[in-house]
Length: 100
Ligand SMILES: [Zn+2]
Image (cartoon, rainbow, N blue to C red; front, top):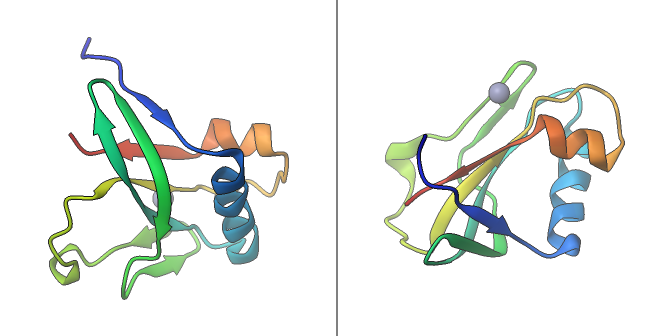
């Protein structure tokens, strides 16, 4: 098993992710997370809407070759909507990807 990394963000940011996902329903969402990494903690400070992303029913895609080099991007957030608007349920079904 690999190292454990903690991802931290404000509740306000988490709610913004949730609201964006709700507005895209039933399509999936994908966003970039801007922040900084310190030791084994990633502190997310901002959301970035990826340019030319596509949001579909059953997929979301970022054209990676179109992204500028930006070392402040620390990860992504991606949803698989279930239709359940409970924030707790959403957290458990949403993936956070961290770049190291
Ligand atoms: Zn997906």
